[in-house]
Length: 199
Image 1 (cartoon, helix red, strand yellow):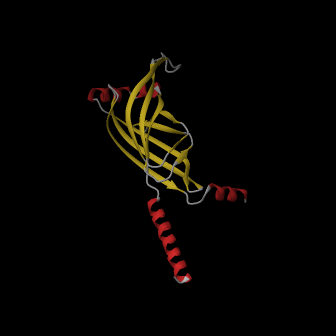
Image 2 (cartoon, one colour):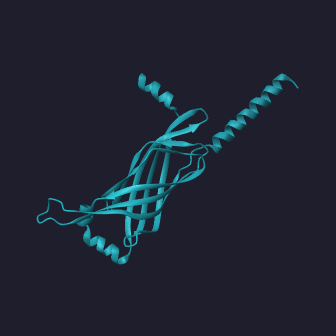
Image 3 (cartoon, helix red, strand yellow):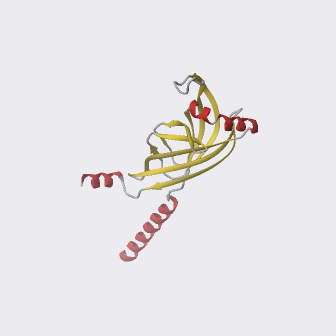
């Protein structure tokens, strides 16, 4: 076989392999689902205001969350905070610890969230209606930063997760949920970013 033809075939095969790898490895949005909610602890407090003080209940919940990484590359992520809202009021937050997740895997996480009893008291009338009809609408928002390992390079990424959840406030059951997630992956490596910062 002529050397030129051999090189042409080799280059064509390599190019096709690179294109196939790029198509297969293109980033896909991860998914996050709330599996269950359980009451961890309950604290009764008496704030200094108003006068006379009204007892409030600070709740600590355990959130069991399923996280799916559909991509062909493993990821590591930094610690972050999940904010929990009700009627646009921030009720509490849950800490997401730093960790990692293999490629194409599903992992179950347990998050501990603390809800502000004073803010719950301020919406007591609405809370009672939610208990009577056994439906309470919550919104969870989290922004996670991390790195994706692609061959020998690490690429920074940011995941935005916006989840609307309907729960039974009496028995803490998840009735329905809709989650939207978006993955922003940087094509530059951390080494390139470090070089830019040095300049």
